[in-house]
Length: 304
Image: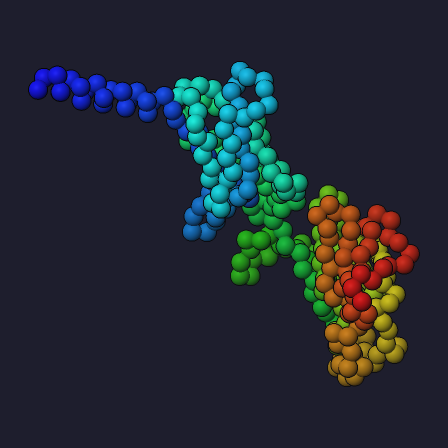
């Protein structure tokens, strides 16, 4: 009986020793939207895991290119490297196919040195073009009667403003700037320039560039006057005058009623690299790309 007890005890020690000799390295790859290096989840803010990221473990002291273990992050961004030597140091290398994703600014890099058994070898990735501060400004357009020259036609305010809070309100353009009725808004973050596009609205006149007008505003300097930036000449035209009195009194503006949504411009947007402005031409029903720096003389319709 005594020998059997010792036999069982010896087997137990052997199993424990085997488990201690091998441990895993694990972690999570995630989209770090707020760039704080932490995987945030909560009732009002949730970050997501990044699937398909390859993680390779190399012996830290071994310069060879053959990894000891390889794993791929799952749907929730988690990965586990197995078959490693307990207590050993490893060099982790993270890689992914999406070139628009970059390493986060507040987390581990694509190469990390860790010890076997660690469970939080995380990697944060994000698209730099999608970064946004906690409380950005929001810009919007406003249509006014022709005689209200002192009223704002483009303004901005803090995102967290509520109710009748006008403490953060900034007036970027006024009726006296003659940009007319506008709707589309696009912001180029590297130059802090705001672009607004013309739109056809009844009882409100078009701006100085006509129905295809696009105007450039300096979002960092509200005192700067809007620039007559570009006119899309194929945006259409109407009988002039339209019968809109300049004193703000009532008007019929019959022709505009018939052409609403069928001419002038729609929305505009800027590519992530800040080089191309995309404009919806309602008159030709096409998407017009414009090189922001060179402004080609003739715009090309991409979607006839």
